[in-house]
Length: 253
Image 1: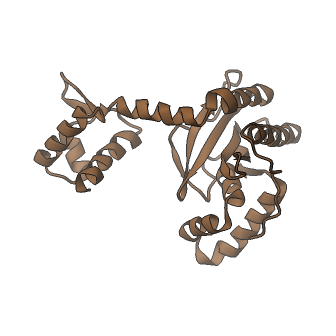
Image 2 (image 1 turned 90 degrees about the vertical axis):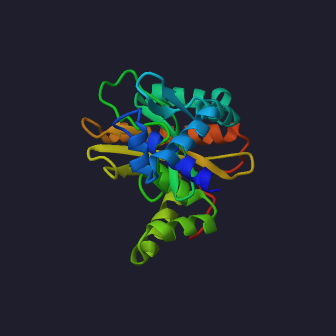
Image 3 (image 1 turned 180 degrees about the horizontal axis):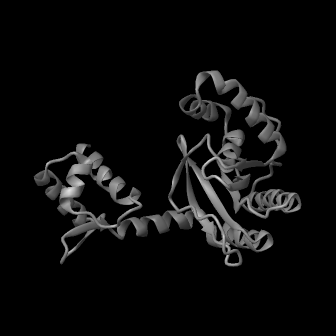
């Protein structure tokens, strides 16, 4: 078990760095707080399984292609190609902004798909795989508002201070009633997003569809278009996945 924990520690360092892609064994030893000798044995085992790769000339390490192989297999199970991605592309063309699909992973969400808008020179760029606390942003609040109450309360208790939980629950009730939500400048000043939930054939929440945009030069008419289109697309995707639910199911918090 300790070996798995250490291997995932290495992968976390390699995957979450925005500044560089390749690391020396010394860098990894410092980041993971492990002796160089231990790190060397661990890296050799990980290379054997394709979890990391080594540049033979520079002796530097990066993530291996096994993650891509497994990731693509998991990606394919979501049926993005046949169901979700075409709807995301259609939405991008309708609103001329970038479109995202996020999934909840515990107390965080992860962006698993993004359709960039080629028409807009100024756009938001959120990296695939980025993790965001579930109490931040339109997509995450939409997911919290539409998931099972027990699951939502567990996440909220971890992320929201006790004194603000009641008001946060009231906000989620409002979001659930509306069927969408907007956020303004929660993660990046001058940017906004609008999101709607996605449900599967069992009427369970599987994620959220969102439009990200820069606030400059946006009009109320354009904002209303974003809201209408993200709701329509969310309902259409959910229906394709077999859901019979309307967005507002009347659940109270």
